[in-house]
Image 1 (tube, protein in one colour):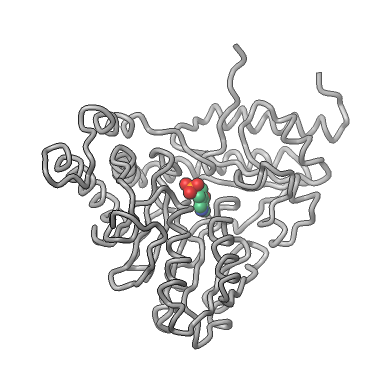
Image 2 (tube, rainbow, N blue to C red; image 1 turned 90 degrees about the vertical axis):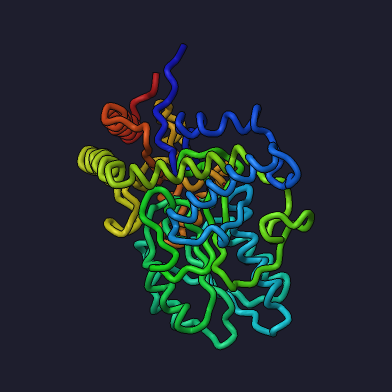
Length: 386
Ligand SMILES: *Cc1c(COP(=O)(O)O)cnc(C)c1O
């Protein structure tokens, strides 16, 4: 059997940690109750498991458990935050929203929807290193600005935004602040109090939890209109029977990430730097996209000048990496994020995101760097591939 490619696409999704799976298993079978069943043990024990997971998540965010709304993932959390705010505020005649052109589609598309509903949305362009400043936001704030949405850490380039400064600015102007923290939670410390965050989205499968479960943090007092109506679960903000095993997995994954972050983060940074430095040194005409220091420890996005991007991915068959984000890679479009940062189409095509994770080893990183070096050299020297 051919060996499977080296997985360096942890920003697309992560495998479930076996300890998370173990915590989840009983909640599929023996303890299968509906957390909303208030009349018997099956319901009570499921409800108790959900309470524990809610506490685990709340404590990693510096939130209160009453401020957590479980969802099917970050896409749903972003939709609830953005559309839910619009619907709750539309009668007050305040319609201005601010976001960034490099946000994930799960933020940009809900804002497109708001525009169709009559909102005025400002899409800011970050500097070429991917950073957005509080000053840039201050410049476009209006008396009728309702909400600012800025991603915490970027899925494609790993850039970590000055979230605390942006939060403080929004708070001072009485504007709501939402952040898509899907790539930050579990990787770097996130504190909704310190950063004055009102709404925060996350998804369990980005930090070794299961797919199909996530959450929206909703600061006490923030008004949202539910996007799913029904049995009034989650304080009426998200109806639908709770995914108990998924929620248990999310809680366990949070707890593990919090426990291991202080050792895991420097380990990943060491491996990322090793990969990056080896490629930059051994492959001519390469450059890193995004700010070199204000970024996540486990991701690098590298452009390879003078090679065809599609061919590059094809020949790198011993690696599982991505060009652009997984959500848009079904189509052969160059990354819109890299284009916003000023790359031309050809260079944006020839850019790869390498994202490492909990199960990445030094041997894998060394092998990956060597493979990249060999493939690019062959392509540039036009040596045919056997
Ligand atoms: C993965 C991701 C999402 C979408 O998460 P889902 O679990 O697919 O809903 C949203 N935002 C960012 C930044 C992501 O990385």
